[in-house]
Structures are given as structure tokens and as C-alpha cells.
Image 1 (tube, helix red, strand yellow):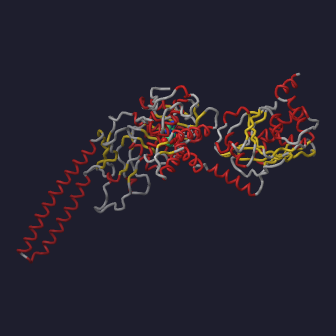
Image 2 (spheres, protein in one colour):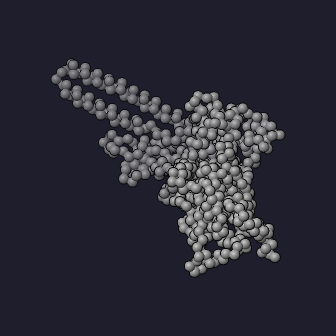
Image 3 (cartoon, protein in one colour):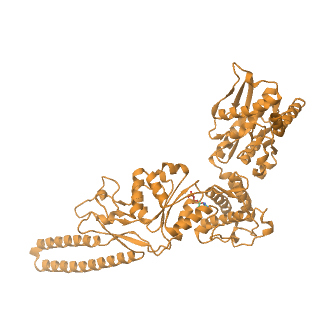
Amino acid sequence: GSSVEVDPGVEVDEEIAEDDLLGGLKIDSTEDIEVPDRLVDQVIGQDEARDIIIKAAKQRRHVMMIGSPGTGKSMLAKAMSQLLPQEDLQDVLVYHNPDDGNEPKVRTVPAGKGEQIIDAHKEEARKRNQMRSILMWIIIAIIIGYAILSPASILLGILAAGIVWLIFRYTNRGSDAMVPNMIVNNGDKRTAPFEDATGAHAGALLGDVRHDPFQSGGMETPSHDRVEPGSIHQANKGVLFVDEINTLDVRTQQKLMTAIQEGEFSITGQSERSSGAMVQTEPVPCDFIMIAAGNLDAMENMHPALRNRIKGYGYEVYMEDTIEDTPEMRRKYARFIAQEVERDGRLPHFTADAVEELILEAKRRSGRKNHLTLHFRTLGGLVRVAGDIARSEDREFTTREDVLQAKGRSRSIEQQLADDYIERRKDYELQVAEGGVEGRVNGLAVMGEDSGIMLPVMAEIAPAQGGGQVIATGQLKEMAEESVQNVSAIIKKFSDVDLSEKDIHIQFVQTGQQGVDGDSASITVATAVISALEDIPVDQTVAMTGSLSVRGDVLPVGGVTHKIEAAAKAGCKKVIIPAANEQDVMIEEEYEEMVEIIPCSNISEVLDVALMGEPKKDSLVDRLKSITGSAFDQGTVG
Ligand code: ADP
């Protein structure tokens, strides 16, 4: 918590707040929600980062922000610029240096003054020009008069006109050269500058001097007029934000560090062979607060000296990915939608049930019990797609239907891949979703962040050619070995089969997929092995996910919601999930009728659901029940 807490300015029904998706907000649509003016008050979650930004703004310290994209790093950096004093702002002017044209002079004046100076110079130049033209016309008139009076000397007249023209050209250039070049103009700034230099090349970051194709002969642009500021100069007295800081090349990072240390940095041409490289200005002020951002990886690849600099003179802060789901938070998520609608300016406001659907989506995307995702950029994307649907149909409000439709459209690449994959597999009938098969179990895995996929596992038992071993292929080999190890501890207890005399082959059907997480498939492997070992078929309308302990407990896994949806899409009728994950299930309505969700806490329960063919199965499950879980403890201890 902090001093900047802002409630949406709407009546809240505290009695229902706890269970209400809107946290008790009494609204018809997001139109009723008040959006705070200051950006810092619009930031949702990230309390620590926000407090640090507020503190760093007061103390003028640098900040390093580490975290996932779209969680508010640049938003906070921008918010910081609004917190900085505006009265410090300056304009920067570059003047011609009469002593050395290649070393332009630099002057700093209070913001707004630059404009006046330029105007005064222009006015002076204009007056001088005017004087000069009047003078010229007088001379021309004299020459013409002279020529009329004495036609013989017309040649002399032309010569005189040429001289006048030359004088005019040169004096004109001279007066242009006297008008300074304002490279930083803060005249109409209402807040301190915010410069986003993410991905900027050296010239854009550090300033540059343009190449001049006409380097002499009176045609050249004076060097001070070719000087261009860099982001570091434009960020003077404000905030310089650099995301993916490690992508800056090392030399540029070094120069950036010098700029931070000195608080001023001369501008010179960045391309070595251009005429700009001969020019170097006097130092230009660049007294900014640096906010460097990136993921953890980026921090490791960052120039160590630069990192130490920021660390030593500032703060480092991690951005959160999820936040605990409370009524207050849900109210803020409703406000988030209002903020995004307002920022976009063209989207219709969201109805209360459209907001509810989005909050539900934020819960689902968190992938964590009682949490909401803080990946706001993608959530904002969903808001815009849904709003665009409503707008394209000229409706006054964005509805729940629009949100549901938008979710279909804004599927991630992984989700599209997974769906596509399921479609293709259906074509090839790889998906057995009927009857019973020995040793074959429908496992479930997660692809990417938000996509589930069905992943059938086959187990086969063969007499060992030597010591028994687990034979599995592909990236899931290790997991397969571990699950077999866990299950063999259980098998020993109830079966006469000596696993050390058997080879166990585990095959994951069609895992050409990258990024499949196999951690959570150990009950799948165990079920397949037991089925193969005991010759009991597995019901192919069942899919499952869960991790297995040596004691036979089913342990929780990630991504259950996506996995259940994948099973439903593939045509399964029942899905086994760890009982401990029951509260993480947030599947969409359309799937609710398609599958039955069966929470299990023990492998015997899993087998009870998954295996087919009574008496044999029942006796196996009974035997298992007596030895797993607490019974298993007694078995080992006693
Ligand atoms: P990052 O810099 O971390 O990649 P941004 O700050 O650019 O992310 O976030 C993108 C957009 O998402 C913001 O402009 C804002 O609309 C929204 N957003 C991101 N984080 C938050 C947050 N914590 N609270 C409210 N809105 C946010």
C-alpha cells in the first residue's frame, strides 16, 4: 500500500464484494468509473515498483526494472517523468562559432526562452535582409539609370550588378549563420521529458551531426545547423527509458555511462567518414534519470560497469507477474478497462458482464490459484479487439459476447499451433477417443504459456535383455524415467512382477512439438505402465494430468485450465486432475458441458476412473488402496 491508492469513485457493495467478480462495484458499464489523472495512480499492482519510482523521482535516482514485457515498466517510467519538477526544464541552443566553425557553441536557457531568442535573431536577420534589399534596389536603379543615360557603358552596368549579387549572397549567408539552432525545445512542455530510447542506434541516443554534401564553396549548411540532439539530451531534467538495455552495443553503453557520469555530452557525427565527424559541439547537458529495463537475461548481458553505475546510484526492482485476487484488485481491473477505453478514445465502454468476463480471463491467464495476471499489455490487446468488434457494429457498449469473440481472435501463436495440431491429428485419427487400449493413456501438456495439448503416452513391457531398464525417447526421457521410478516403488508393494527383469518402453505419441512441458505427466506414465503390466485396458475417453509422488499421492501441476480445454477439444469425456488443483479450474462455459472434471488425490483413484474391465480392475484398485497414501506409510514403517 501507499499514499497513491485511488478507488474508482464508484459505490461499492461491501456485502457481496468478496464473491462478486466486480468486487462489489455498482456499475452499468465502465463509463461510470473514474480514471485518475496521474499515470502513477493508474498503475495496477506493482506496489513495490511504484513506491520505488515515487521515491526515486524525489531523490533523482536511476532505476533498473526487471520483469516480463507488458507489466508496466515503460508506463512507470513515464509516470515518473510526470512526478519530476517542471520548473527545472531548459532549452538548448547551438550557435555558430566564428573562431572555429567545427566547434559550435552551446547555450542553455530556461524553458521557453529559446523560442524568444530564435525569434529575436530571425527578426534581426529579417530587418537586415530588408535593409539589404532596399539598398540593392537603389544600386540597381542607379545602374539602370546610368545605363539609360549612357548606353555605351552597359557592360560596366552588368559587371556592377554581378558584384551586388555576390555581396548580397554572402552577407545573406552570414546572417543565417547567426540564427542559432534550438536542439532541445521545452517551451510548451507541461511535464518533464520522457524519452523512450529502446532500440535506438548510437546517433539517435547520443546525438549526431548530419553529413554535408557541399562541404565548401559557399553552398554548405553551417555546421551548427546540422547538429541533431540525441535522446540523452532531450531527456535532460527528465527520464530516459531504455528497455532491452543489453541490445545496445558495448561502445554505446560505454558512452551512455560517460553521459550519466558527466551530466553533459558533446554531439559529434556518428558515421566516421561523413563531414559530420569533423564537428564536435561544446558539451550539451544531459542530466537525466535513467530507467533501464529488461528481463533477467538482459541484466546478465548488460555492460557490468553500466549496471554497477545504476545499482550504485539507484534502485533495482522486480516486476510481478501475478497478484493476489481480492475484491479491491478486481475493482482495479474494472478500472483498467476504463483506462484502456479512455486511452484509445474510440472504443465503446464495457458493460458490467463484459468486465466480468475480462476479469475471469485475467484469473485464467494467471495460471495460479487466487491470482490475477499482471500481463496487462496482452490483456489490453483483448480489450481493444473486443471494443473494435463492438465499434465495427456501431454499438454503444462492448458486451460479454464481444469479449468471448475477441478471445477467439486474439489467440496466441502457441494456441493457434495447438489448435491446428489437434485438427490435423483428428484427420489422421491419431486421437483414439473410444474404447479401451492397454498401455495407452491420454496425457495432457502445456504448450507455450496458454495452450493445452493432448499428448498420448504408450507403455510396453518386455522381458529385459540384462538388467531391466526404462527406454524412452525424446525430450521427455528424464521425466519418464522418474515417473517409472516412482511407480515402481508402488508396484513392488502389490505386484509379483519384478520390474528389474523387465524393460519398460515409454513412447510419447507424436511429440514433434517444441515447448511441451512434460513435468506434469507422471501419473500418465504410471497409469500406462500399470495398465501394460497388468493387461488391463485404459478408457480412451479419459485424459489426465498430475504429478506422482513415491507414496502414490497425486500432486498439483500447472496449466490445468488449458489442459482441460485441450482434452475437451480432442473429444474426451472425462479429465482427471490433481485434487489440489481443483480451485485453479477456470474453463470457459462451452467446455463445461463437454467434459466431466474428476479431481483425484491418489493413484488408486486415478486407476479407478481410468481403467476398464471389472473384476480385474477392482481387485487391482483395492490392492492399491490398501498400500498407497497413509496405508503406504504404515506399510513402510511397520
Ligand atoms: P512494459 O514496458 O513492461 O513492456 P508497458 O508499460 O509498455 O509494459 O505496458 C503496456 C501497456 O499495458 C501500458 O501502456 C498500459 O496501458 C498497460 N499496463 C501495463 N502494466 C500496467 C499496470 N501495472 N497497470 C495498468 N496498466 C498497465
